[in-house]
Image (cartoon, rainbow, N blue to C red; front, side, top):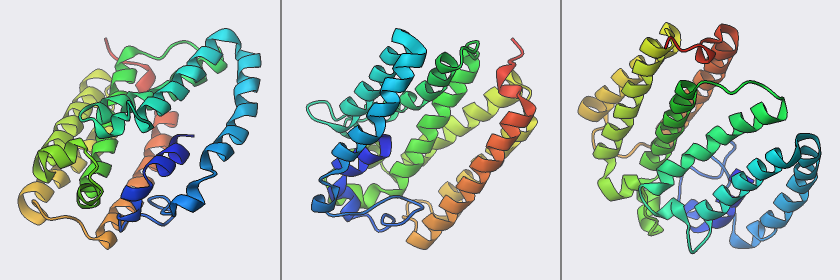
Length: 237
């Protein structure tokens, strides 16, 4: 639902985006080929909505409905928050609702608010990274984003601030040296990116693919570490 609706409503910008059209960064199809996407989403998700509502009750149904509404106001007019900076970043908190969904479905204890804050900041940071890579095609498509509005360098500084804040949270709130160290190393790379390597220059498609592969590998390793360590469930205050 999330990525299908995004592709369906972002066809123009994606058609102008050289990094799209592959399994790493997403589809690039004509409006005609995308025409049936909402129908496919409906047929694929409806059975699961019905099942989860049956096993999880009214509370889970409301949560799922809320997640659907999030996607609608993000993608469709008159709201279309994806083109209303900075709300296109703030609404990324919707990704955190997948954790709340899992908690409700499996009758688990609520995770700490500190963990929810970290996950929210991570969602913000990841979205900004995508916006930075898409500045030129977004400008061509007349798509307004925070990165387009403030420029590449300031957007990188915003991403750097979030990375440092996340690193602080992991180190001092969760005593997680591994994830904190990784984000600190990523922050150092971003500092070199801003002041030495790329500065205001856009990345090439090859460079973006290398970054994308590296970040996916890092994501898989971090998931394994989070599951193994359990540190994000135990803040120290």
